[in-house]
Length: 590
Image (cartoon, rainbow, N blue to C red; front, side, top):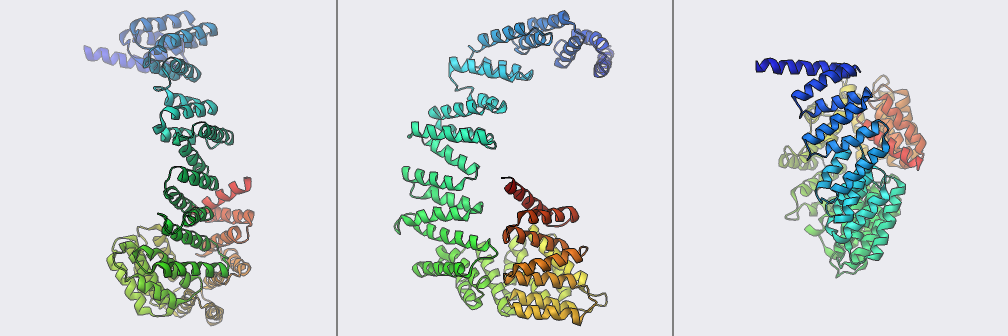
């Protein structure tokens, strides 16, 4: 029998819901009235019944329903708020206002009960009344229990001035809440008006309360959130001196700037550390950091001046003359070797420094592995293939499933490719297509496709052998010899499929020689005349990159990035192109 009653109620609920959903409120109201008698605690039945009565303009019935619920559950604040809600639905705004004001006056006296009233208001989307409830409670009990909720409500309703002022007042008595306050502020920093107000008010509080360091910390975080690194540097410098931090804050900011590619501001941080003299705590860190910032700035530019690179080399050499070769100077040694190998192409000097570096004891294993890979590259540039193969093999063995080991395996496969051992190289590259590192997997895929697309079905490797040799010559920075080989390929193998690869590699040679106009022309010939070949998207990306970073032609760069995104949507360059397109769009708008 009990099952039958339960089934009947369930059936009536479904029918009532059907009527309610189709707007047949009269039929729905009849059923919900019966259902509420059987299940007076059901929020769902009550809500639909009340809405049905409102839809039917049954004012008296709706008010009666809510008052009955108040009598049944006098501890709930949802129903008293619902009474005001019903008054409002029937245009009795004064009654609704009086109801809400009475509720606030009564319940704001209860330090904790006001939270339930605010939640009841928010349930009916009465955000302004919830704010008034909290503000009334603050007047009586202070903001200790309500400030976080109140700031959140101010922020959500666009009242950033009140949110800011309350947050700053909280810090006066509770400076440990700085991280929470900053979280709230960071959500408002996207808009220029609110960001300006937050910054101005925070500065005002710093001046009023210089001994509350939380305000200074907050302002520094605001500058960093807004990517105002120059202002952040000035603020960090002032704080570092005031709090006697001996440069620790500046060292940290320098690394933050490095991570965000703000190399000039990073250099300012490190120069400040150096200015404090050789006996200061972070003097050596400052010198290493400054050289690293300058190196990263040079390496991020495609047309760095020779005198800038030579000046940086001198700086590294002076540093290493002062402090010698050791574990603590190992990062500087590696940077100097990179400059010799890949910027002024003095291979023997690079090998000499790296050979000393890998002999230093107790180096971090990954750093040592990376240094061995670079030394392997140096030997390969010099043409000492066996030495290169040996070093790549060591790293592969020592870092089996690690990305570093996979990189070593890729370089060994590339070496075999340079040496025209195409079948063996291809087998190794196939393994690497599932590498942990996306970059290694992509590089392996590119080289494997190059071999696959250009080795004839009859296994005639002659043309591919010449092209691989040209790539090796460019790797060794023998640009003239590389061009000579590339120029000969179309005559030796006129019907071969390497045409787009030859053009692409010529573009790379021109780029290496800083003949950027010529490089652009070659890239354009690849993506215009060979749009269905495997290098078309690569050429588009490289051309866009040159337009952006060498010629400063942002609109043309955007056009090329967009073309890549639309025409080559499965390209490995799509994600990066989309990111660069958006960044350029923002830059142009600003």
